[in-house]
Length: 364
Image (cartoon, rainbow, N blue to C red):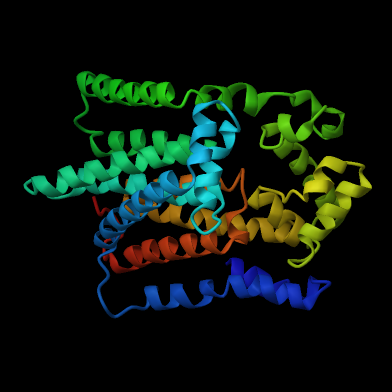
C-alpha cells in the first residue's frame, strides 16, 4: 500500500527526481509480498523467527564488544554523567550509523519474539527452552542499553502481554505476582546500573511543555530540549498547520520535508529550522505528503497485521502490529529503508501464514 499511494500520487511531486527516489525505496513492497504470498515452498515462519532471534542476539553482542573496545570515551562519559542521553544513540550510530529508535524497534520485536518462541517451543526440548530464555534476557538488555522510550515500553508491555496471552486460561495469582516481581527486580537492577533512565523518562521528556511552538524562547535549546517531547510536539504542530493547506492530496512525496522546513522559517521557529527536524510521526508525515487519502491508506496498511493476528488468535502477530502502530506515532519508519524492509518482511510472512492456514483460526 505505501508503494501504491506513491504511484497514485506521483503526479503531485514538484520534483520528479526526488519523487522517484522516494518510490525506489518502497519498490520492495511490490516484489516481496508477491513472492512470499505466492510461494510454492512451505515457509515455516516461526522457525525462521527462531533462527532470526539467535542471529540478531549474536550480532548485537559482537557490536557491543566492539563498542566497549573502540568507544570507551562514550561509556566513560555516561558513567560520569556527561551526555548520558547519547549513549544509546552512539551505540546505534556505531553500527553503520543506525538511527537508535529504528534499531530499537527491531530489537524490541526480536526480544518479544524470543519470549514467544520460549513459551511455544516443545517443552521436552529443555536445551532449546533455556537458550531461548537467555536470548530473550540478552535482547531485553539491549533494548534498555539503546534506551529509546517507545521501544522500552513496547518490550516490557509486550512481554507481559505475550505471557498473559500464553497462560490466559491457567494463570494464578501466585504466577502473576512472580512474573511482576521479576520484571520489577530487573527494572530496579537496570536503573541502579544506569540511573539516568529515571531522569530521561521524567524531567527530560516532559519539561518545558508550555513552550510548544515557542522553542526559541528557551535558553540553550540544544542542551535543554533537543530530544525532548516538547520539541516533537512543536514539530507535529507545525506539520498539522502545514497539512491544512493541502488537506486532501498533500504536498507530494518529494516535497514534504522541504516545505516543512520552509514552514519553520515562515513561522519564525529558528531552532527547528536550524536543525531541519523531520516530522517524526509517520501518520502526520503521510498527512503532509499525501493528505487525508494517504493517511487512510496508511492506517489500513498498519491495521492489516492486527486483523491477521486476531483472526489467527496469535499473540506475536498482534504484538507486532500494535508495537509498529505505536512506534510510528513518535517516528516515521516508513521513510527509512530499514523500517520499510522490516515492515514488508513481517507483514508478508504473516500474510503468508494467514493464507496458508486453511481454517484461518488459530496457530497457538
